[in-house]
Image (cartoon, rainbow, N blue to C red):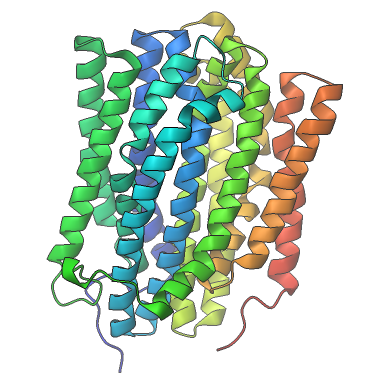
Length: 448
């Protein structure tokens, strides 16, 4: 007899409805999470200037490098908890939750120290323009002071997603984003704190979201995933399970971020206007990335619970449905971005030269998005089944290795912004084909 759950059991029911039930809260959650940096970008671009916009934009790839590491580890926790939740192993769920939350505290403390100390070196190493460098260092060092709440929030929402609750993380992010908007306007427009103001606003918002998610986990009644602070400790089996999925995923994210750092360095070579345009474009194309990320996260939870319940055919049907829906979303997003490129980019900057460069970036890259969706969705499903090493290796060699080869060989020979941008679709196509071959013929869905 199956035990009834207070939260989301997705091992039965209509697949497309359940995926969308998870997708939309995750999408809006990702939207509000990205709103942090987007509001920062709009505020500094409009009220401080192009140099400040370039400064904030230059920090993105470094911040994403660290965020990607603990996001990868939190995905390990999502899979470990989702599989045990689907299999009704309540004691293992409890151990996994407390292991994951303690891990988040330690990771956050580590990155606070290391990130703060290495910020000046990392920004100089990637060729941040001299006029943007002081603001970039200031922004990123303040940002790293908020690492503990940042990691705790991401791990805590991972726990909630694993057990089928994607609504409360959305509510927490709405509150944090509103906090960020108010503080951005107050600290930058009223108190004229510039780059430091938007960084402080972001950290305060992260603290608020972390507090809300921790209080939510502590207040759960009658569920194995309730957080009890005095029970925080490492349990060997859950820790091993989290690391088995989390480390390859984190390494993959590190390699992605490293390749993006090299791309940022290549963009920096073309000057402050190009950096500002790349920053504005990056905020615009987040519409696609947050859609893909939300579907991938929904699919990972779906795969994890169904794998834990032994419903392998249902898992694969979920993959097919998610790919079809994401392809439809991607075509729509591409059309909107190409048609409305200039008015959307003008939200971030009024500079005509920056706008011209940014429109070219959108027209070149947006039609290529469709080639990437398998790179994100198929590994998400495979991770849900507890396998992450092979997808990581394929992505590292396909996306990251080939991209670095392109940047170091092809770009110096034909040194244009378009050649830098071309590193994306070329590597997406190669990696999509490779990961599909593994999905189709690999033994990732082994029976228990």
